[in-house]
Each structure stands twice: as structure tokens, then as C-alpha cells.
Image 1 (cartoon, rainbow, N blue to C red):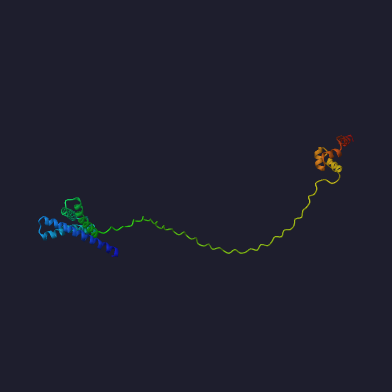
Image 2 (image 1 turned 120 degrees about the vertical axis):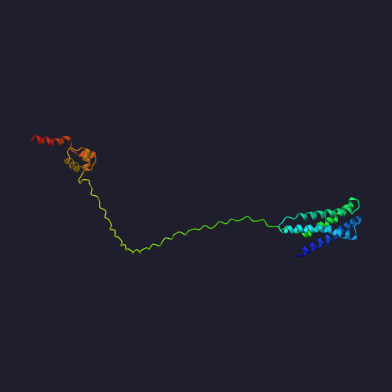
Length: 230
């Protein structure tokens, strides 16, 4: 027990003793004025104030045992409070001030008994929100492919290919040899009935050149007529 708890309990006990002594004197005076014997008047305050203490302790015992406080304990505390208040007020002078002062000792005694017999409630921390942990999912291992045996590839020697230079050959000229007049005449003799464009194509010259060097139609007909006359 720490020093603070010890000091508080001693102080509360002192208050209970002072209030109890005052309440004892008031109840004793009321009992004597009522004609009670001295011995009875001396023990009567103990029975009244002690009844409050007994009922309070009984209710505490029920609570510690997780039971509801018994009815008899409640009635004992209630009767003791009413009796001690009535006795203390009856012993005072018939004035409001005197009666208020006379009511202080029983109330102080009752509170002191409550403080000594009861303890504070334990403060429970607020429960933390439950954290849901996801269950681990079993993952099946993927099948591992078997290693494929790779046969070594034999190196192939590639011989360089010699590329011979290609000689460019000139295309033979389709243009007939000789002068334009000779070519026109040769084409004319080859196809006497051909048109000028055809002769120009065969001779490789223009149509104007053909007209210039090609014999006229009268000249072409003369040999034919001469042959018929003969």
C-alpha cells in the first residue's frame, strides 16, 4: 500500500471517530432524556451506528461474490440512517441552525463508513476492434518443365563464293547499216507494197526520209508494166 492510500485511510478513520463521538453523545442524551438507564443509553449509539456499518459491509460482500445485495442489508442501512438522524436532530435545540448542526455528525459518519468499506471500480480499457487476418491461401506449385536435351550443332564451314564480274555486252544495233537512202531502198525492195510508216520502221528512219528516198508509185509500176509487155 502506498503512502497516499495510508494517509487517506487514516484521515477517513479520524473523521469517522469524530463524527461517531458526536453522534454517540447526541443519542446518549436523547436516551437519558427518554428515561433510559445509563448503561442502556451508553450502548444504544453503538447499536444504531453499528447497524449502518454491518449493512454496508454485507452489501459489499454480496457484490464481491457477484450477487445482488440482500434485502436485509439494505433495510439495516436504511433503518440505521433514519434512526441516527432522528436521534441527533431530537437532541438539538428547537431551532433550524441547531438541528442542521446536529445532523452533520451522522451524515459525516455514514460517508466515512462508505469511503472505508468501498473501493473504486476498476477502469477497463476499451476493447480494441478485432483485426481479421486473412487465412493464407495454399498456392500449388506450377509444374516445372523437364529440361530438353539439346544436341550440339556441328559447325559448318561456309566457303566464300567468288563472284565473277559480269561483262556488259552491248546490244547489237537493229538499225540497218548504210545510208538513209540505201536503207530506204532495201526496205522498199523487201516490201514494195508497204506503207511509208512501215518502210520507215524497217529502215530506221523517219517517214519524211522515206518519202524523200522511196521511189514514187509510177516508178514502182513501170517495171511491172514492162514485164507484162515483154
